[in-house]
Image (cartoon, rainbow, N blue to C red; front, top):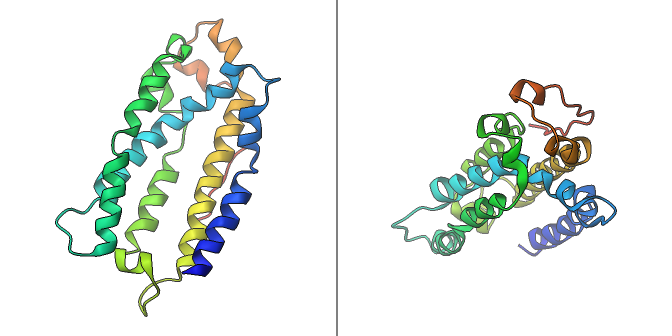
Length: 188
């Protein structure tokens, strides 16, 4: 288990250095531009809410690890509401409707997270048994997924000129014309 925690600490430090986080604190970029990633992040937030509720939460358990996971999930079950409330304060609704926003993000990341989690039962999450994949494999895969998400978010926020979009009106078909050169990839 010490090996797993050491890997998580190492990967967390590496993750914190991603361009996405540098972009967020770059004060030479307009505040609204730095927050434009929220347009893409909304579907992930909602998918993650479902993941926590329908995949991670397993009621009526006698498994002590699942009991701990359930308590953690209950403590976080309403965080998505704060995200949506925060979005109301941003001017994105002025130029982007809900249907258009669905086109902005690949839902593949949240489904891949589901798939990885379904492959690991609560007993395997805590220790290595003969039918369990090495825990470091799951840690590596999860960091890979979140790195791809962070790359996609910063690519969007850097490429789309939110100030320009806020000053013009357009319909959803115009959204497809917006340039986005870089693509984030997820290896499956």
